[in-house]
Image 1 (cartoon, rainbow over the protein chains, first blue to last red):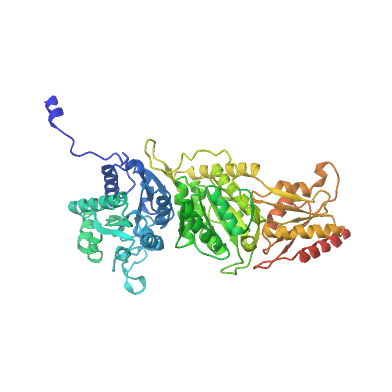
Image 2: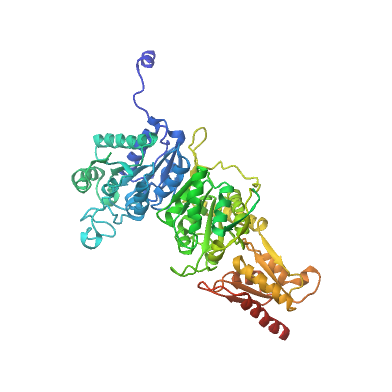
Length: 252
Length: 363
C-alpha cells in the first residue's frame, strides 16, 4: 500500500512557505489571517519571495512581518504609499506592496494613497476594509456603515456630523495613475478565490511594469467590534456591507 | 574638478550631495530653500538618480524612510514649518535606526512666521524634535564652502551611526553666493548595510521596525541608542576656537551669526578688547568640553581670569542653554539674540562686547 501511495499520489495542495509556521494574534473570525494567506500564496506562486518588500500598516496587521517570510518594514500610520514610493523608485526591479487598513489608508493616509496613485507609482496595495478601527478598540472608521455602532458612534453612525462611508476605491479609480482597482470580499469561499485572483493580478501588473498603481480592496470581517459571531459577520458583509461597497472591478 | 565657482548655498549643498553619492532626493517646495529642489530636479535626472516632488513634507520624509530602508543614500530638504511636519518620520527613523540626511534652511517662526533667516529651530534640531528619546547629529555650517563640505560628512555620519544627520542652515546661507570648490572627499570606512530591505533571496528575512512590544525590549533598544549617542559625543564633536587663548570675553555663535561675530571679534581686538570666539560646528554633539575648558582656564595650569561668555543667536535664546550647561555656573553667560528673522549687525555685536568690558572691569 505504502509503495502504491508513494507512486500514485501527488501533492495538490500544501501550505505556502511564505506564510511562517506560527500562530497569529488575530481574534477568532478575523479576516486578516485569510488575507495574509492569500498574499503569501500569490507571492509563492509568482516566485517573487526573494525580491518582494512588504509594508505593514499601523493597525491590527502591524505585526504582519511576523507572519510573512519576506523583507518587511513597519511604518507610520497612513504613510505606507510614501514609503513604498521611496523603495520602488530606488529599486525598480523589486516588487513592493503595502497592506493597509481603512483607518490607515482612508483616514490618516488619504493624501499618501491619492498621490501615490496620482503619480502612477508602480505599487501593489492591499486595502483591508473592515469598517472599523480594530486595534484601538473599535472606533468609527471612514468606512463605517451608516447606523453602525462603534466605540465613538454609540448611537450608530449618522451622516449628519459623522459623514458617509468613504468609498475611497471609487475615488482612486478615477485617477489615470491607478491602472487596476478591484473590490473583493472574504465572505465565502468563492469570494475568497476571487480575492486571491485579484491580488495575483495586482502583483502581476507590477511585475509587468504596468504604468501605475494596483489596488485590491478587501471587505473583511471584524466579529469582535461588529459584535457578531464570525458566521454572522460573513453574512453582514454579503447582505449589508457590500450594498455600500459594491463588490467587483472598478478599474482596469 | 577643483576650480572655484560662484554658487548660492542651496545649490552648492545640492551638488555636494550628488558628489557624495546621494541616490534619491525627495522634497516639497518651501522658501528659502527652493533652489535645492530646482537644482536636484535637473541634476538628479542627468545622473539617472531619483528626484520626486512629494505631496507634502510628511510624504517627503517617508519617501526618505523607504529609500533608506533599502540601503540607498537618501535626503530631503525643507525650511522650518516643513521640518516640523517631518518630525513624525524622523522619530520613526530614529526608532528604526535608519540613516538619513535632512537639510533645514531655517526661517523665522513660530507658525508660518516669515521667510527671513533664523536660528530658532535649534531646540527642535538638537533635542531630537519628535517623540521619544532620540537625537540627530546636527551640523551648523557657516559658509557656502562649509555647506558643501558638510554634505559628504553628513552622508558618512548617517551611514556609520544609522542616524539622521541634519544640516542646520538659515536663509542667508542658503541664498548667498560665495566661491566654492566642489570635489569628491574620501569616504569613511563604513559598516555594510546588511539590514537593508533588498528582497530576502539567499538570506533570512530582514525587518525594519520601530515597534517593540515585549517587556523590556524597547528599553533595551533605547539603551543601545543612548550608547551610540555617547559614542558620537565622544568622537564626532567639531568646533572652531578663534582667538580664545587670552580672551576675557568669549563669544559663542554658530552658522551665519558666527561670521558676523568673527568680524566683531576682530574689530574689538583692534580696540584692544581681549575677546575670542568659540564656534560650534556640530550643534549636537555640542562642544561642551571645549566650552567647559574655556570656562575653567586654571585647569590648564595657568591661573587666568574666568571669562565672560556672550552667546549670540538669531533666536530668543536656545543654544545659550547648552552654553550654560557646559559652563555649569563657573562663569557668567550672557545672551544677545534677534528672534523672528532679525539679523544682528557687526556694530551691534561690538557694542555688546564693549558693554561687557565695562562689566568686566567692575568685576
